Figure 1 (cartoon, helix red, strand yellow):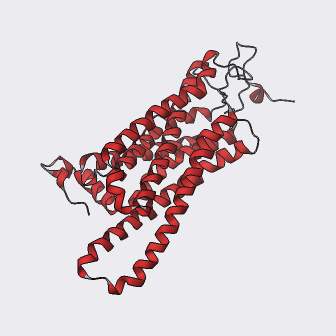
Figure 2: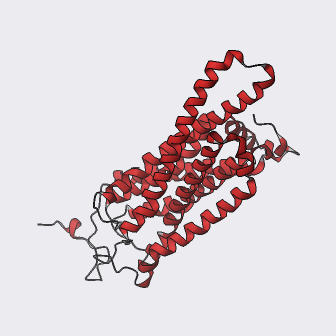
Length: 326
């Protein structure tokens, strides 16, 4: 027999209301504090990435423009997606069916933009490592800006494409009043947002890894024979290999955060978003936005130096954009 607490309804005045299954207050407080901290941390770190790449002229490279686009995506996840995700952990949804559908536009757009940005970063590293002589001609800032613009246009289109059916009759997939459930075409979403982009990223980075290993071996075997006049070339190769390794870590972390959710979907589970398990899987996807700038802190010396200049407000000084960060 259900207790009164278990039988409490989200909307007592409505017969079709969902039941409110409360959880311990300590557990709720822990979840709120943890997720709020992660959200704030994500916003601050990615804001530092955006300011660094935008302000310092030395960082205005094609690769960093892609990192800037990824930073904007991660910043929006921390600012708009994570705070609302807290509401999905509540037993009842009080903002209405239309707001429920509109809320999911932001995750769809940002997740899609992250995927496309990762594909572009993989292409950038592939050309830099596998075809370095033509890299500067093929990967220009103008082309990268166009690709970033197309990335965001495609992401917005993707969000409307997969959620338009839910807008026709908001709440049609709810089993009771007080739920926030959406439905997408599972097969199409998995193919377009997981199989195709992830396969592209993995194939490109496997090729980059093979070429990078062969180049590293060649550099080690001939390092003693390198003359002073060719030392600049060796330095450039080393920097490209280091960049490939760092961005490889970013891609690896990206895959670890994204794969669990889509693997559950591939196993035959419905893509309707309502259970606590799915909510956790989604938050793991969003948590990737917090990890990216953390990786930059550990691997990029220029990012650590730019953070110091930003925090100490030295960027407000005249000609601070010309500071050498290397």
